[in-house]
Amino acid sequence: MSEAPETSQELSEVLEDLRRHLLWQEEDGGRFLQVDARLAAELRGAGLARLRAQAQAAKPASSVAAQPAPAAPQPAPAARPMAPRAPAPEPERPLAARAPEAAPVRREAPVARPLEAPAQARPAAGPLPGVVEGERPTLDEIRRELGDCRRCKLCDGRKNIVFGSGNPRAELVFVGEGPGADEDAQGVPFVGAAGQLLTKMIEAMGYRRDDVYICNVVKCRPPNNRNPEPDEVTACEPFLRAQLRAVQPKVIVALGKFAAQTLLRDTTAITKMRGNWREYEGIKLMPTFHPAYLLRQPAEKKKAWEDLQQVMKFFGKQPGQRG
Ligand code: SF4
Image (cartoon, rainbow, N blue to C red):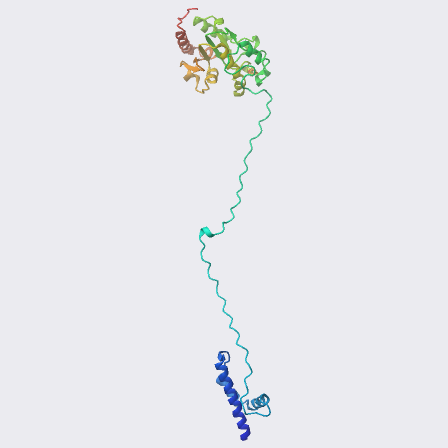
């Protein structure tokens, strides 16, 4: 069946309209309108009737073939969205330009606070109240200051305070460790067996006992004749030093390690210290063995005698010489 010439003319016009439209699309942004050959074939062949109807509907009734129908205004091609750019890396800021980082909060370790010193049940040792440091007190002043002393625990078991005895202006002072039972009972230093030996030693040196002054580091008897403990020595030591300031002897003989170590503040063993002159506050000091030790170790009496002979030599004395 052949098409009528009018129909064929119309079809040609439609195709021409379509071709122009496609050209316009290509020239004016046709990048977005892709029409391939398959679609063009469909337009030319199978879809003739439909295209005719569409073409008729698009044309004004009075001028079907005068001018190609203006193409419907195409929306302006939308701006192609820009592909999101990867953020450019931030240039490394110089260190000085950087905002200072917040300094970490330093937490100081809690400082351990020293514990409060426990309340002392006994008066603290120290400079003697009532006895001016550096001045020469009298033995009576010191004894009055000592009073019924309870400055250390040795007061608990004592019978008597054994302060000292002898010449308050002696040139020679003997300092022992502490009272024994006999001394505690009588209140006088060196009256027991060790005291009797000391008296013989003093007389062998050419002195009478009353010529010299005798005292101890601690004034009260330690229980069971034990050694004085450090706190007891510390409590009583100021009275000993005050006694030596009062007497101001030329020579001190330290009997045993407690006397020597306390006065010299030296922990050297008495076996090494003995026989060697030392000095205590400007006063010559001779360390030697304690008479109680010599009673236990009679062989050591010879060494003690040698030590005392050095003292005699200092005073220009001969053995047995009195005065
Ligand atoms: S040993 Fe000395 S400090 Fe201790 S109670 Fe006796 S006198 Fe006082």
